[in-house]
Length: 165
Image (tube, rainbow, N blue to C red; front, side, top):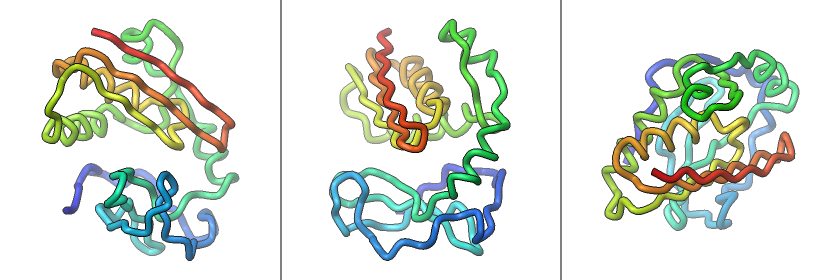
Protein backbone atom coordinates (compact mmCIF):
# COMPACT_ATOMS: atom_id res chain seq x y z
CA UNK A 1 0.00 0.00 0.00
CA UNK A 2 1.37 3.42 -0.93
CA UNK A 3 0.05 6.42 1.01
CA UNK A 4 0.17 9.64 -0.99
CA UNK A 5 -0.23 12.46 1.51
CA UNK A 6 2.12 15.19 0.35
CA UNK A 7 1.25 17.26 -2.68
CA UNK A 8 4.14 19.72 -2.72
CA UNK A 9 7.76 19.30 -1.68
CA UNK A 10 8.67 22.31 0.45
CA UNK A 11 12.25 21.48 1.40
CA UNK A 12 14.97 19.34 -0.15
CA UNK A 13 17.69 18.16 2.20
CA UNK A 14 21.18 17.52 0.87
CA UNK A 15 23.28 14.65 2.21
CA UNK A 16 25.22 16.98 4.54
CA UNK A 17 21.96 18.09 6.21
CA UNK A 18 20.92 14.53 7.12
CA UNK A 19 22.09 12.14 9.79
CA UNK A 20 24.09 9.23 8.35
CA UNK A 21 21.98 6.46 6.85
CA UNK A 22 21.21 3.86 9.50
CA UNK A 23 21.86 0.18 9.01
CA UNK A 24 19.26 -0.44 11.74
CA UNK A 25 15.94 -1.28 10.10
CA UNK A 26 13.99 -1.70 13.35
CA UNK A 27 10.77 0.13 14.12
CA UNK A 28 11.59 2.83 16.71
CA UNK A 29 8.38 1.96 18.58
CA UNK A 30 8.21 -1.85 18.79
CA UNK A 31 11.63 -2.94 17.39
CA UNK A 32 10.09 -5.09 14.65
CA UNK A 33 12.10 -5.40 11.44
CA UNK A 34 8.91 -6.04 9.46
CA UNK A 35 8.49 -2.59 7.85
CA UNK A 36 7.56 -1.40 4.39
CA UNK A 37 8.08 1.79 2.41
CA UNK A 38 4.77 3.66 2.11
CA UNK A 39 5.89 7.00 0.72
CA UNK A 40 8.98 8.63 -0.74
CA UNK A 41 9.39 12.06 0.87
CA UNK A 42 12.38 13.01 -1.26
CA UNK A 43 14.81 11.48 -3.74
CA UNK A 44 18.57 11.94 -4.04
CA UNK A 45 19.20 11.39 -1.21
CA UNK A 46 16.22 9.18 -0.50
CA UNK A 47 14.06 9.81 2.56
CA UNK A 48 11.06 7.52 2.92
CA UNK A 49 8.19 6.97 5.28
CA UNK A 50 8.35 3.41 6.58
CA UNK A 51 5.33 1.72 8.16
CA UNK A 52 5.72 -1.08 10.67
CA UNK A 53 3.63 -4.11 9.75
CA UNK A 54 3.34 -5.08 13.43
CA UNK A 55 2.38 -1.87 15.33
CA UNK A 56 1.52 0.21 12.19
CA UNK A 57 3.64 3.17 13.33
CA UNK A 58 5.12 5.31 10.56
CA UNK A 59 8.59 6.84 10.80
CA UNK A 60 11.13 8.43 8.48
CA UNK A 61 14.03 6.42 7.12
CA UNK A 62 16.45 9.31 7.75
CA UNK A 63 16.28 12.43 9.88
CA UNK A 64 17.82 15.89 9.57
CA UNK A 65 20.83 16.87 11.67
CA UNK A 66 20.30 18.94 14.81
CA UNK A 67 21.76 21.97 12.99
CA UNK A 68 19.33 21.55 10.08
CA UNK A 69 16.38 21.28 12.48
CA UNK A 70 17.49 24.36 14.42
CA UNK A 71 17.76 26.35 11.19
CA UNK A 72 14.40 25.10 9.88
CA UNK A 73 12.47 25.71 13.11
CA UNK A 74 13.92 29.20 13.50
CA UNK A 75 11.40 30.20 10.82
CA UNK A 76 8.30 29.63 12.96
CA UNK A 77 5.44 32.05 12.56
CA UNK A 78 2.25 32.42 14.53
CA UNK A 79 -0.92 30.63 13.42
CA UNK A 80 -4.04 32.73 13.92
CA UNK A 81 -6.30 29.79 12.94
CA UNK A 82 -5.01 27.57 15.73
CA UNK A 83 -4.95 30.42 18.25
CA UNK A 84 -8.57 31.21 17.39
CA UNK A 85 -9.57 27.56 17.79
CA UNK A 86 -7.52 26.74 20.91
CA UNK A 87 -7.31 30.22 22.45
CA UNK A 88 -3.55 30.12 22.92
CA UNK A 89 -0.36 30.99 21.10
CA UNK A 90 0.57 28.28 18.64
CA UNK A 91 3.26 28.23 15.96
CA UNK A 92 3.37 26.46 12.60
CA UNK A 93 6.45 25.58 10.62
CA UNK A 94 5.30 25.34 7.03
CA UNK A 95 2.57 26.59 4.77
CA UNK A 96 -0.87 24.96 5.13
CA UNK A 97 -0.27 22.08 7.57
CA UNK A 98 -4.05 21.78 7.75
CA UNK A 99 -3.99 20.22 4.24
CA UNK A 100 -1.84 17.38 5.57
CA UNK A 101 -4.14 17.02 8.59
CA UNK A 102 -7.22 16.77 6.35
CA UNK A 103 -5.59 13.98 4.35
CA UNK A 104 -4.45 12.15 7.49
CA UNK A 105 -7.99 12.47 8.89
CA UNK A 106 -9.48 10.93 5.74
CA UNK A 107 -7.02 8.04 5.93
CA UNK A 108 -7.85 7.44 9.60
CA UNK A 109 -11.61 7.66 9.07
CA UNK A 110 -11.40 5.09 6.26
CA UNK A 111 -10.20 2.58 8.90
CA UNK A 112 -12.23 3.90 11.85
CA UNK A 113 -14.91 1.63 13.32
CA UNK A 114 -15.57 3.49 16.57
CA UNK A 115 -16.03 7.26 16.82
CA UNK A 116 -15.92 7.51 20.62
CA UNK A 117 -12.23 8.35 21.02
CA UNK A 118 -8.88 8.54 19.25
CA UNK A 119 -5.37 8.59 20.70
CA UNK A 120 -2.63 10.31 18.69
CA UNK A 121 1.03 9.69 19.47
CA UNK A 122 3.05 12.33 17.62
CA UNK A 123 6.64 11.13 17.91
CA UNK A 124 9.00 13.95 16.89
CA UNK A 125 5.99 16.27 16.64
CA UNK A 126 7.77 19.53 17.43
CA UNK A 127 5.14 21.99 18.56
CA UNK A 128 2.25 19.66 17.66
CA UNK A 129 0.83 21.72 14.81
CA UNK A 130 -0.14 18.77 12.64
CA UNK A 131 -1.55 16.78 15.58
CA UNK A 132 -3.68 19.73 16.65
CA UNK A 133 -5.04 20.24 13.14
CA UNK A 134 -5.68 16.49 12.87
CA UNK A 135 -7.55 16.58 16.21
CA UNK A 136 -9.71 19.48 14.97
CA UNK A 137 -10.57 17.53 11.80
CA UNK A 138 -11.38 14.37 13.76
CA UNK A 139 -13.65 16.28 16.18
CA UNK A 140 -15.36 18.01 13.24
CA UNK A 141 -15.86 14.56 11.63
CA UNK A 142 -17.74 13.21 14.65
CA UNK A 143 -15.00 11.76 16.87
CA UNK A 144 -16.06 12.58 20.44
CA UNK A 145 -12.67 12.67 22.21
CA UNK A 146 -9.08 13.03 20.97
CA UNK A 147 -6.03 12.47 23.18
CA UNK A 148 -2.79 13.91 21.80
CA UNK A 149 0.62 12.93 23.15
CA UNK A 150 3.62 14.68 21.62
CA UNK A 151 7.10 13.34 22.26
CA UNK A 152 10.02 15.26 20.80
CA UNK A 153 13.35 14.17 22.22
CA UNK A 154 15.24 16.75 20.20
CA UNK A 155 13.51 19.42 22.28
CA UNK A 156 13.18 17.18 25.37
CA UNK A 157 9.43 17.74 25.15
CA UNK A 158 6.60 15.58 26.39
CA UNK A 159 3.14 17.11 26.06
CA UNK A 160 -0.33 15.67 26.50
CA UNK A 161 -3.65 17.32 25.61
CA UNK A 162 -7.19 15.97 25.59
CA UNK A 163 -9.87 17.48 23.37
CA UNK A 164 -13.48 16.52 24.03
CA UNK A 165 -16.45 17.38 21.85
